[in-house]
Image 1 (cartoon, rainbow, N blue to C red):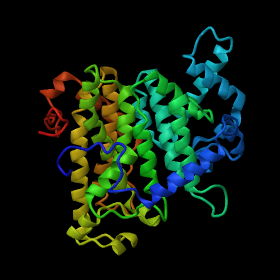
Image 2: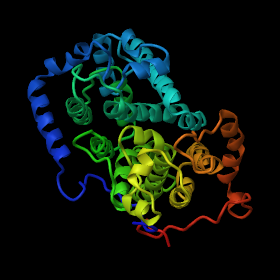
Image 3: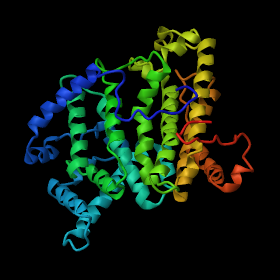
Image 4: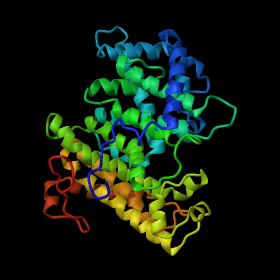
Length: 417
């Protein structure tokens, strides 16, 4: 895969069914038996007295308020029925349903802003309908991530597998019948119905990616980049596939969507590789090392060195190598921007430009991602926006900005020529 096509792993497993996948399947079967009737499932909205799945105390603190306290189950289910019916204006409660949906989208925007400032900045450049849908997708992804990564007190609440089992079952029920449990589901339901080409597969694959992070069942070491590549697809490449139907593509039909898939996957992988390089020290504190052991061996870097957060010339050389790899994925992704609808190009290019600046910051920090945070300020991001706009104009293909390279061409199967 190195230097070739960014493969779409949609719906596949990593060389057989893992013990984590078996455990999740068993947990889902148990959960589905317990919630076989629609009445018991709807009641789950009320049974989570501590809030919604994936909206924990850290999320509440980041947003600045308890999102779950201002909704009623009856109103939520009424709004869901209205959305499933096509949001008819003739409904006597249309105004209240519309207001509730607007509030859900506003809350989704606040969550996005709290946890993904660069991403949120890019969405501000989008049309309102697309922006709200991207927020709804982000919030679903955020909640999926929080199920695994949020701090837990042993013996309190449900386990990760139980919550992932509920979460995937809820996803499947939303897709098959439009069923919702809590208010934040409304945004995803509305988005799903607004963009019929939006498929469930990348959402299900993201759950499998989070399963890879479950302690004791998942994977906290990666032997090769191919192994890491599957993880990157599942937890981030999937976001590119989720977002593309919302962004829209210039070339109509399935062929246009298919051509845009490889750059979308590349952007997701680029973002995740950037996260991994930024967070090496933080991940080590959780007992995780995402850097492939084959790369570590190549540069003489040991696992104990990373766990002890010790810099060395070999480690710096390895970081240079990893940064070059991530930048290749950004380069692949960049050519896909022009495949999108014109109104979506600048937001995506801005997100790409701003997030890739994290790699520059790692370099400026002397490749020390143990003790120094690679941080891009809001001012730096804003100053990048005019450059992002220019890169989306036709003239930039002939009169490139300093440092910009000629875009790679894509062949008919989505690979790099």
